[in-house]
Length: 214
Ligand SMILES: N[C@@H](CCC(=O)N[C@@H](CS)C(=O)NCC(=O)O)C(=O)O
Image (cartoon, rainbow, N blue to C red):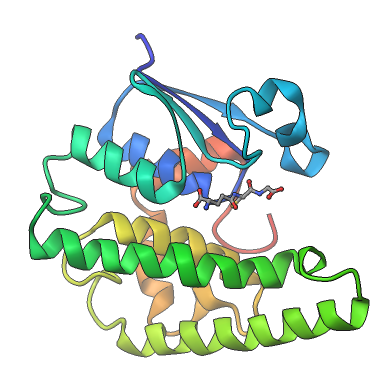
């Protein structure tokens, strides 16, 4: 089968969102690992694909697309007929994008404070504070979402692309104390997501698990 897409990913990163979507849509694609821990994203070979030196990058029939939010919208518009994102111009699209925007612009940056506090200051004391405050804010947000998550999906009664994004972010939250993916209402949602064949296939290909430290 000819691949329509090539996804550049590092295991368990935000690229997993795109990886799951490609699996959900059942479109042919090639998945190419980029070992960010070894700095492969800074090498010329990858910089030629994504000069921003981040994953994901998706090579599409139209060119290279980066940024999870843009990729999610592009793939959903091409392959999904409005199911996971809502059709353009509808309230469902607006509300799903609202959730995705929260994850991309509020929560992902908070995780940067948690995982990469050295990006914020060379000063160890400042780094500790950055992480501490980031952790507090993440926990407060996950606790609030946990209290609200009383329907089958984070989005409501049916799966949307925002649920896939939330699953990846909740997985990062396994490093928090308490673990976000083990919170009372998030956990059953998260397990429902892990049980989806598309999610399981993408995670297996990336070699990552839903719980624990892998
Ligand atoms: N705004 C970008 C963020 C991409 C991003 O931060 N990717 C991370 C993995 S989740 C990455 O490539 N990190 C490697 C680095 O920054 O050195 C998006 O949403 O796609």
